[in-house]
Image (cartoon, rainbow, N blue to C red):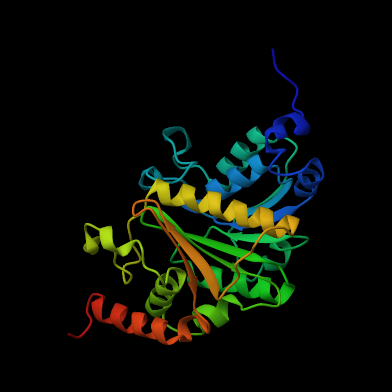
Length: 289
């Protein structure tokens, strides 16, 4: 016997941590997520289970076997399928009433206006090395007054930064400008996690190569990111609780059992960040000793 879907029954166990009125507010919100891979896919499913009612989702990629260790949509049965389609169906299995718009070409200057149309919040799910798309999406959020969250899976933990309307922007924090991609990668990595909790237990440093745009990942990091980002989303959308916004952020590392709040006025222009960047440049492959 098939039980009929009921929004109120499906998300009743949220009540207590949110009020019925707040749950109704979440049902009326629309979130944009670019990237349906490691963090983006689990962001979507987590926020769908929170009861958010509408999404714009973007990804041009298809699942392959290299995604199996961390991407919730990657299975034998989905090999070769578009990520945006697989995750859309998974989210609709959670809530068949979802108002969901797909952007199967990913995000770029041609569709940013549509991607952010009537959106209440942006959650970054792009690949670490998607510099152009990330720069464009966060710039659009700053221009349109849309709050934006990035939660990075680093090791077996998560580093979280919020960018709120009227506050410090992504560009002001990271200082990418027109820099080469390798320098953007260094600035992104160092800026995301000033505490650097994840670095001490990396057993094979050669697995990270910014020049070749590759690095290790874990499902634990991706799932911790989704929990953290969804919590930030709840606070932003319901306007309740403490919201740390850039240049403030935090990093939680489950392997080291540590939580550190960070504060870097000026972002990567801060003296400690400039020192960390200098050391990172010296350690990268091909650097002069």
